Image 1 (cartoon, rainbow, N blue to C red):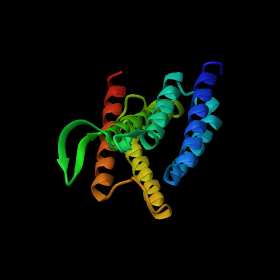
Image 2: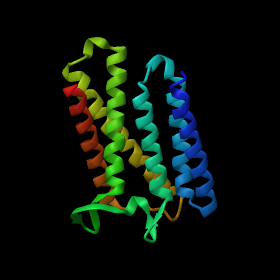
Image 3: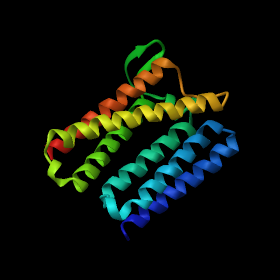
Image 4: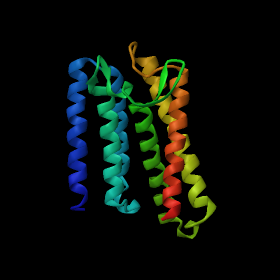
Length: 191
């Protein structure tokens, strides 16, 4: 439990800090995401004993939350970090590939696939090394990525001015969610 305390304190600190920041700048869109973070933190917190998450996984989840909060709250070149092109690989109808947003989607749903693999093999050890142990976390992570897009859509409906993007952005997000999940499952399979 002592190893978990630093992760918990770090996560609570940045969520509180970004909540104050989002309220101060009037970013109501990200208040929806703060609420989502609080729910996810509660789910992880209440399942700590049963799930026995590795500390590295908790840090990876916390880092994902921080990257997400920073993406919507850190101003860069007149926009937010989420809009920052990292490596201009291609452009699709005004959407640059690879942006910070897409990298965070890939990372986050890769971590999600890792977490789902951990839970599956912990509670059903007979699945270790099986097709199920790799395919179920992959597809479940993609499903949770689609749920994330529904949350983004609810932000668009609830808040008049959002930075979510249009159809192409949503499709790219789903592709990067799947890519991150696939990479994570391949890494877990190699271990």
